[in-house]
Length: 189
Image (tube, rainbow, N blue to C red; front, top):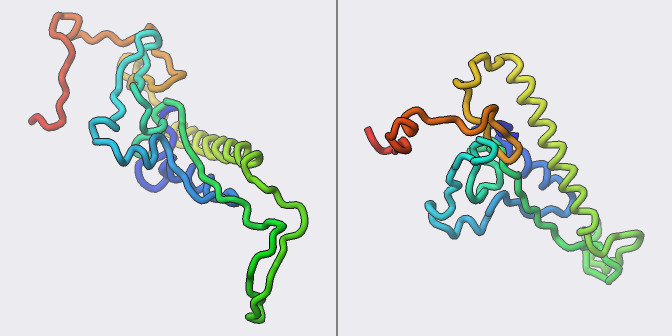
């Protein structure tokens, strides 16, 4: 759902990164386009908004942000990637140093997974689910303190893949009167 997280201290993206990076062997985290997005221009990376003609909800055309913008979920699918290091405890002899400062060889014994991948996927899914449930609980606690008592027409347009606006897309009075779409430029005075 849209609206989970906060713009500064409790960013949803930061909470997801913290949760996923706490998984053993996790060494990298990215959301949305991640590092590949840094190679794009701002215009190319921008998630343009549009009104879904079927649901009337506000959606993004590309979801390059991975469902999170400014630390807050926007209702699109949340996309994260977590990188894991290879297993270092293996049955092959390796050099190490004892507590006494002596160089020795060590051969790993016991049950050790040769690859963390089969266990990594459900662990990442679980950590993401726990983080999202925590964010939902925080949002519910906060929003119930200050319920939105505005009429349906005065409320913000719902956002995301599962959102639907009652009565379909909101009608723009100026556009309906022949004025066309309203241009909102942030650099105009």
